[in-house]
Length: 368
View (cartoon, rainbow, N blue to C red):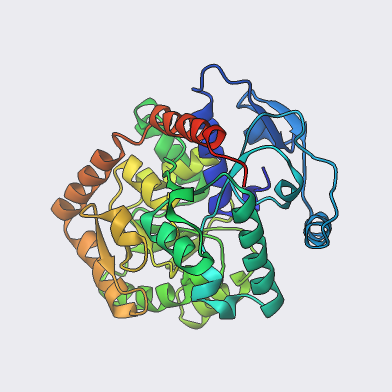
């Protein structure tokens, strides 16, 4: 497992996969990851220490290009599932599947250097050739993999990971209010949990929120995410727009606090310009929190009628959707109920069953 808490959605995805696999029967599971990570330690897996630095990735990649065979890092296993790409897989002789989350570099090449784009494409091509199966989370991404990487459709399986299960019924009103007080959360706020990457579209959301507070001055926007990438640009824009009192940044917060924030939020706003699937949308659905989200790529497939969709390139469209939910409690309640209904079937048990079916499929396919 390569993902870390700083990896954003791929980390949450990895934890969801591991949580689900706790329901597996007749499998002896070993996790290759950081044994000091408390999120992993609590899951109870046998953990073998594994890390893949940039230097190691370069070495694995170069050896593969040159046809040099390296020792198999996973020689003791029968089958492998990687929740994100891992270049050590280029040197295993074991059957494996890996998750290809998106091909964003084809849509927003300006967000990647030319060497990085070339590297990612080459890695995906090489891994996809060796993999028995490729996992993705939406039909939209599957079509991208077929179209852009020329991978046969039958080699790709769409399996959507549920968010980490949180038993909201076990949390009292007092717990939520304790989190509100400790984090200094406002009475009425919309929530955007995202790392400060360009495609997360924070700058346009700030433009939109200027329009929101002109009509709803007591409504706030709460952000999370590590102080890296475009964080300084975003915070400077908040200051220039005079929104320091209206926009609050919490930084990285622990999972139990995150779930409380979802519950307390008036709505989740998701203006991202690119997602294979949005884990925050599912987390909001799970909490019964209304969702307003981008109308592009996989969002319509994921959100359906359980949220309001907007043009993420239009600050006025984003503002209008936020104001609709903020000003119509009946609509907000209806959207929250629809979101919860969508989550009924998305259980860890069902996800585990799908992953076990994938393992059987991997073992049945011939080695590429």
